[in-house]
Image 1 (tube, one colour):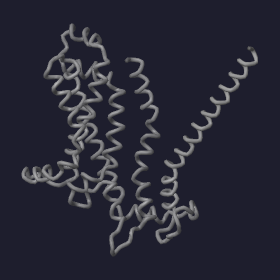
Image 2 (cartoon, helix red, strand yellow; image 1 turned 180 degrees about the vertical axis):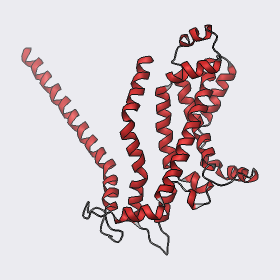
Image 3 (cartoon, rainbow, N blue to C red; image 1 turned 60 degrees about the horizontal axis):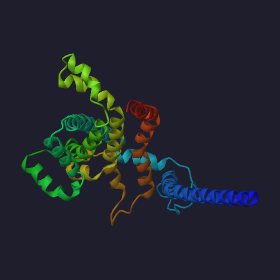
Image 4 (cartoon, rainbow, N blue to C red; image 1 turned 90 degrees about the vertical axis):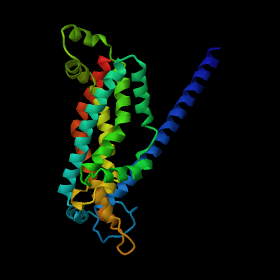
Length: 288
């Protein structure tokens, strides 16, 4: 019996190790599929603009000429400022409006609050691209100018359903008792929200900032539709000029350099602020 049990345990151990080995192989293949395009882009960006060798010849040349031309043609400082203004302003308004909307929805136990909750959820179903034509016509009838602030209206509107849904779900896990002492002391609704409720929303706020910042920063559809002056373009729209057309071929090495320059601010931001993100999530887990 002892020999049979040891044989079964050995067989289970071998099966377990084999399954772990297969999982690691799948993970390695998945990482290769994800990382390979990034390596090709970065390798091609380090070539001279006229170097048209196969992009699979990784790091065959090291030159900053493509970066210099991309920096100059994009007017990188101006477009970087436009992207920062659009992303920062939109995310700030999104956090304020969605958190304030989620507060009464999560706290008031009534049919109206449930109706508002489902109303915001319904906004997740309809993509903005489906209604972009009537929205553009409405903006024209309202004489809304096409400048760098016009896409912010769309970014804020499209982000509110998801952000409100996220804040509402998080607020439902925060007990009402944390506000009772402040209520008994005579503080009004705004003071309770500002001093007690909003600081507890730090994990949800971090999640909203991360998800919406990435989407708004990388989006080129709304700026392309609603901005008419090239001086007010954001970084993703500035990259489109390197795609070329039938008469002017695409400048791939410069385009890849422009992609790296556009992603660089986000990489730096998350590298510097990753501790704050982790601390905020950890603090929310302890409080919850």
